[in-house]
Amino acid sequence: MSTIAHATIVMERAYAAAPARVFAAWADVEARKRWSAPADNIRIDHEAADFREGGKDVSRCIEPGNADYVATV
Image (cartoon, rainbow, N blue to C red; front, side, top):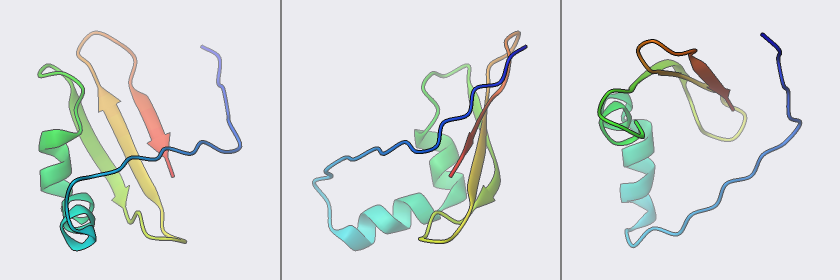
């Protein structure tokens, strides 16, 4: 298996919600598990969930029978 490392990735999204509500949705790990998985058969595990500036956010996308994908911010 090969490893690919990227220096920077930027994702932007506009939400039709107050900033406090959006922040609360990202801060609630249990809520993120429910809405961040791309499909019903995929599980998201959070090893670290501090997405604030200077924090560390690490999640693992787990699909049965396939390789896990790790996202680190």
